[in-house]
Image (cartoon, rainbow, N blue to C red; front, top):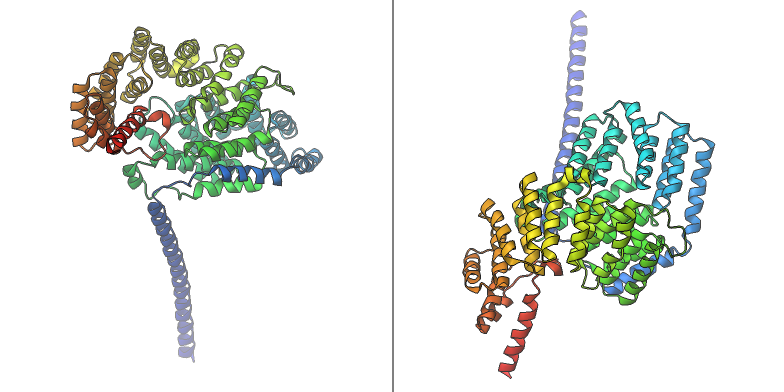
Length: 618
């Protein structure tokens, strides 16, 4: 009997072991199938992204852009009433319990999305009084005070954040990063954002930290001192940080940031097959950016900032009509906001819709002069600075009339902000593109009077002043500024090449430009792009023999760029019209290249040569 019980126990034990092994095996196989499926999805995604070759959506036609705008207006003719009802409902919930963080956060975000920063600040103040230990409330108050240029109140809110979480709290580091981003100190913004990432504990803190890190990367990629490869690295890092922020907390602002970062990343690798090949496993799918934006617009169709970001994204893709449509919708939502009104004016100029452009310029002038209906005494310096920056950054997109828009704001910036360095720096860029060298130089010189900015970005600001001096036909002064910049820290080869290229395009002292370009060529002798710029400068100077020799060397080396076009211009100047026509027809303009980046002689000379050839055939 005893042997039977032993055998039964042994059989049960064996069955249990087999059962456990079966369960473990089943779990392992299930996980393995999940891993395989995930790997297959990733492989499919990567293959599709690679096959798509990072191509962006096709630009809208004028008819499609008008239809987009008219459809929006039709759907939201009475948008203010339902929007106000939603705000009223949230406010009622918030007034019952002001410690309700979810209601406070939603009300705050809705007011901000509707372009009511004063009301959003009031809500944040009430929230901090009711819940003085809620870090999110103090962060909201700090953000709104910064948006409204209330520096003392913003600093007080940040000190409270530091007190709550210690001097190195996540939220304090995030706020310092965002403030540094606002004053264009990208390196400080990066340092503080990385601290925030290390300190973050909760999902909400991690989302805020990665959001600040993405902003810092996207700010750094516009720094003058970075090479194009370094900017590309920051575009990629900014996109990846934005995705992490969205992973930890899904908000409209996070979706908007992923759209912007993905769009900039895709634009950066467009036309660069070597970068695209290197990043093929990381590139966002071409439709991904648009999907994130659609999520924002579906939830908050009246979010004026989302339409502004869409406008800038379309400008990056050289989609003139699409940019105009998005800017006009933003203008429809906030018809007297100087920033959105200014973007509407710029895009109307760019899309060559003259009635819209004329009307928008006129209204912008009235707003800036304080003559438009409404209270514009609360227009903030940061709003003007942001608008000035967009004018400067997107100036090359616009045709020759657009400088009128840029210059409308200049006297107001100068009189209101006085020595505010970044606004003046940005306006000097816009004025230089407008062909107003003297005023550009005046703005650049005023920007140099700000000690804090000179300490942070002195070399770049002096380099900008040198460029403005060259545009103003003052090469000696430009030499002085460049020497001062070099004494602070070495000017990068990229900056020297940029200065020489601008002078080649818009005119100036070609000898001075060639001297600066030599610094770049000595630093990076293998960079054919710098040799390409030198060839164009030699042609503009009239040194055809030397320019021809360099162009032939570049074309034999298989250089990209416009070397074959410069060779055509030289041949035409020397009377070899047949070869000139052949060379100019071989010029390959990069897809999406801006008009201001293409030597205007290419089209002019090609048109003349084709007309000559047509007459000879006739």
